[in-house]
Amino acid sequence: MAAADPSGDPPAPAAGHVRIYEVGPRDGLQNEAGSIAIEQKLEFLARLANAGLREIEATSFVSPKAIPQLADADELMDRLDRAPDVRYPVLVPNERGMARAEASGVDAIAVFTAASDAFTKANIGMTVDESLATFGPIVARAKDKGWWVRGYVSTAFGCPYTGRVEPSRAADVGRRLLDLGVNEVSFGDTIGVAVPRQVSELTGLAVADGIALDRLAYHFHDTRGTALANVMAGLGGGVRCFDAATGGTGGCPYAPGAAGNLATEDLVYLLDGLGYEHGVRLEAVLDAARFITAALGKPLSTKVGQAGGWDPKTGQPTGRI
Ligand code: COA
Ligand code: ZN
Image (cartoon, protein in one colour):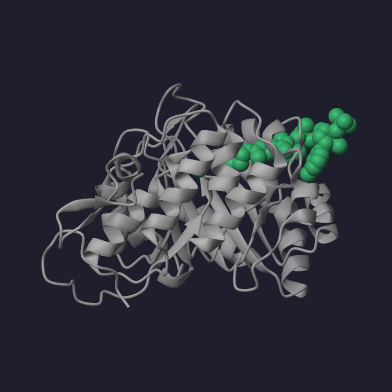
């Protein structure tokens, strides 16, 4: 059932289903400076599942030197009380990460490369070609086990080292990930520079390259306030999976002080108003957003985090304390 239309108009016609892929515990937390206790991470994960999120990227099996915030990944997955109907993918950068994933009892992983060699080098110490060569056997092994596998293409619109990225290049890397056997490709606007026209262009090229719409996701950062506009462009092109982080955590390591990931609460409000079904309850997302930003010692600064939802019957905000 579609949620109440927050605009106050008659209920929006059913517009179909959208998957909200939560990245707060991984992408959101990995860039946060203050370290967070494992108990707080587990509580955050529990609140996200309680909010109806059914795909929650839990952590990363990367080098603890690269991402100290997620150095507790093995213990986290060991202690995580996994909801039976929730998928908890973990990031895997190499064979070592795959071995840790295998030992932790996961059934979903994400591998990650980028559309630019300079970024991939800085992020995982490999060129794009080298990363794809590394992921080939990992993806094959994961698929043999019946796992679900996602592939990320970071810097799909722009690179902090080399600037503009040609959409054909991003689409090509996505296609090569699919050829390795991943279930889904998520194109990331890692530094938050994309505008809707570029999203539409990339969707068209990706589909023309053989990436079916139901295998395509977008991962927007709201660094320059364009994330929701970019979601609209994705929806318009037929994409039905969007990444978001509850509380809009994450920031941007290349733009100090900038906004982080597209906030799950902002995305949920938009999708509700448009009549898309997604199964996520805004009030419960706001609860989880308040929890994690308090744990980080930060104010909740997302749009809907500040304003709350809206009840058209009373004209009053909802989900605020
Ligand atoms: N898990 C834990 N430790 C790992 C590891 C993994 N998956 N992969 C490598 N390491 C350790 C090695 O054991 C080694 O440790 P040591 O210095 O104590 O001997 C050290 O990390 C360096 O290993 P090396 O194989 O030389 O890798 P590297 O230094 O070239 O780093 C990555 C490569 C991929 C491990 C590293 O760049 C990384 O983890 N990047 C992740 C970045 C990320 O998560 N970005 C955000 C997502 S977009
Ligand atoms: Zn991101």
